[in-house]
Image 1 (cartoon, protein in one colour):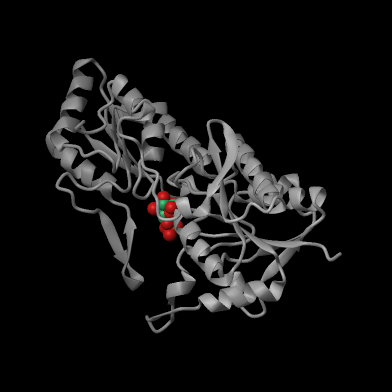
Image 2 (cartoon, rainbow, N blue to C red):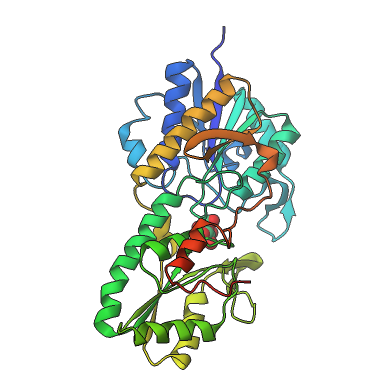
Length: 362
Ligand code: F6P
């Protein structure tokens, strides 16, 4: 009987731990089931190119080296939706059928997609159109994929943000400054609120909770009265101004990118508090580097479970981490749903309990 073949791709923004998931899937598929595993290059693009661009893996390639490696050795894209593919002349074209045809050329029987919420939605739609059995593995430093407590990459990004806090605290104290750390997270504040608590922040601002500049200034004043000469503020990139305006910059093709809320806060607070303010924008440092031990474990569990789902014919599902266990949920319950910070959940209540200003409680 011919050996079963599966394909695996990474899609959307990269993060630490993608290669660990790929490695786990390769080991499980080859060692346990005797299948052949094809890594597809550059997300959906690898199946849209002719010839299709893939690498067949063996267990020797899926080494410990791969487990530790940051980024994605397969490559990825976060701007090439095959249904609205951006063409050089500025128009968009539906190239979805090229993806489906590429898949069929490979003769694979199922696709493992390692992606965030956007990729899950697009790939799920592509797979439904082409009758392609798919299993998803959630990844994103933003940790906003529905129905999973953790997505690959979040733990490492959080460690980076926590370390940044540790490095900012002493210099803030030396210069009696208000230090503002702007972290990633797109429209959710998981990195900000967790890093803020872990790093001893006085103020944490997240897109889920509105704030006032007056209250931030009051909190900094309170800290001063208590005898501390400096303060730490963490702000998620997706926060709006006090008046509710987006802080984004427009790029080629009309793409709006986050960034700048830290500087806005710094400028505003410089007028309201009697202290110097400085801003650090952490940016893509949160996505790069070796995966943390936690991310390696989550990624490995996800890779193994994804292959087991295919083996058991449990398709069109996404692996997930719930209550300390790996499990799986239907893909159509994930697509298009964002997992935001619960303004009254444990993490937010912990921050409030510590006296951190996290915005105006409704
Ligand atoms: O979704 C992950 C993420 O890192 C966001 O936190 C951030 O806003 C965005 O991607 C940055 O995207 P790009 O790599 O296109 O600049």
